[in-house]
Length: 313
Image (cartoon, rainbow, N blue to C red):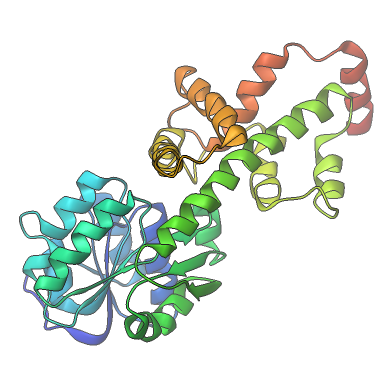
């Protein structure tokens, strides 16, 4: 591919999965030129269909844009995209800003920040709060941290693919907030599943329960977003796969352990995500903890089944 000269207006995206692909879609819809790269050929084809430019490597993306977004699934993928052969570091010019949106251990991001600093590239720590389904409808929030002036320059870009963004302070603060948010997500997703299983066994219609509870004090974003999946008992397509979420759970666990902070509800909740893995639900949405709980609860009493059946008529 012939590398295009960098554009002050273009945005580069490295990692075009569930989240990065949604970022690209919204930015292109806002008429922001996007150059992107992903190891999956199908994702590059999807970017072309949206009107974006598929690049041959992360380095080519960095050569085409002065602001990049990275959304990557693991520390290994992060290292390869930034500093591997044809990585961002080999195509970026001095003054390039990299918006790092992945959920990764903070020490991994901090090492990358220092390496980029040596070549004049600014790395921002900007994890995302929201599921893939929320990203698809631009219902996510960005926890931006790092150099204040660079974060301010990126605010118009954030507005192109997120509902809101917050400047949270020094580099790394965004990730700390993300870990806390995901701790709550882990618990609230399981509590939502628990509520649906209890409703079923009590003979309460799941749709009615969801409609009524979400309008009162008992609701949560996970109840609202993942409740419909549990009502349908359909956990595909996944907006956060169980196996991918194991990475996030491990990061939170290590973060809390390093601070010697007890996390009793989080610790208990993770057992059900582990059970989902063992049951073969690795590629399903994390809402599948509902299936784990239903299995553990056993058959629904006949009296409750009759109540639900009458409601459905």
